[in-house]
Image 1 (cartoon, helix red, strand yellow):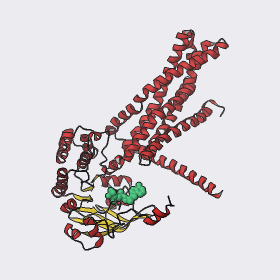
Image 2 (cartoon, chains in turn blue, brown):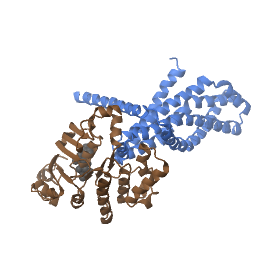
Image 3 (cartoon, chains in turn blue, yellow):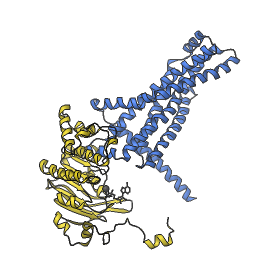
Image 4 (cartoon, chains in turn cyan, orange):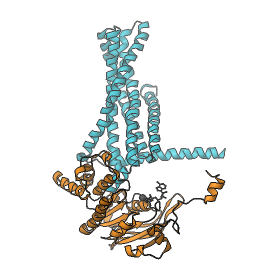
Length: 260
Length: 278
Ligand SMILES: Nc1ncnc2c1ncn2[C@@H]1O[C@H](COP(=O)(O)OP(=O)(O)OP(=O)(O)O)[C@@H](O)[C@H]1O
Ligand SMILES: [Mg+2]
């Protein structure tokens, strides 16, 4: 019994320690002002790797989710004879919830795991160590541009996801099921509010972007330098990031739209 | 940097001075109260059986590991006490060839060698190009400049890494197993290169190696480490002809003797007959 409690305490301490270390990693990575001449090309390269290469999965998923939302929404709204509200329903669902959350989950699977594996492999093959010996801090050179790329790309991808989703819903709702196109758009414009919906969704996706990228780069940097270690860290990135996104989503939603 | 001058101790004839240094991995002492001097302008070899901590020693000198006790003074700075930015400053005057090569896999051979130059100098592109090609020529890889590290053989990767380690003409170059995986021709080139760089450019060199003949042919001074201690030191001749049983065993490659070939383990009898502790 005592041993159990001790083990629990130890794992609690381990978790706290890992959180502390991940905080230090982020702090060191972001502390100094980056040198624009050298950092900018690195950032652009990472935006390509993290953001542009995630576009396909984001666009395709957004399209399908929008189409499914339209089908489901049409069936429900139809019962109350209010299928003109379809545009409004789809847009609000996407902007407030599905856009940020689903994008973050896909982003963790697509970009987060790649970041972890890449940094982990660099550590395993002593590339990070040799960079340190050349006198370059890998936290600045490797971790920092990847973090900023995630920070920038995640909200952008969420916005793209929501926009494509609306188009998908338009295709299914208006073109296929015959909802009136004019009321689809005008209902949407009338109900979506800039601050309440667009900004709150944007804030969510910024928070998710920070958390997912942070977890991904830390897991890579902290990996046990073996092939098994890399595979574990990669899995951990996806699991931790997904759980963190869903948990934070609840908290943020409660703060933004709840009675808090 | 001002903080760096304040920690500078009196200048010495040794580029690196290790004093009473102890380093533990868990319960196991990799080094116990070790004293090692690396004289300026000389080629010093560190030899010893596999797994004694030769790579660990280089990492301690480079400040990537911290000793549990003792001082590691490099160019007048006690490395374990340096802050992050001072440490990077000191490292910019060191070059290290990693045992695995450790080329950056996302950069070509050319860019790998250019990397330290781009980071630490403001040289114009054509000058960087000249330096990089010169270094690659020295290791016989000028023609391979556009290859990616994944397209190199093990020996080539190591030579490319060697070119990168010396790109900045650092004051101290540490070579971890520079001869491993080289054919006799490339081996000869690398041996000469290390000697030449040391003499022509006034580097201080540390060579870690098992290759007794090659190392003896270039080293001005040799340390033999085993079991966490320096078991012998001296010029190549002195070490090769040493009377000390442990040194003699290692230098002549005799499997039986006071230097253990095996990683510490329970007795054979315990492991095979009782076979319980797995
Ligand atoms: N990350 C680590 N964690 C725990 N022990 C380690 C670690 N790295 C190395 N060791 C131990 O430290 C000892 C020294 O390792 P080191 O790599 O310095 O040996 P070496 O002398 O360079 O050997 P070789 O000639 O085979 O390269 C080894 O016995 C190894 O078991
Ligand atoms: Mg080694």
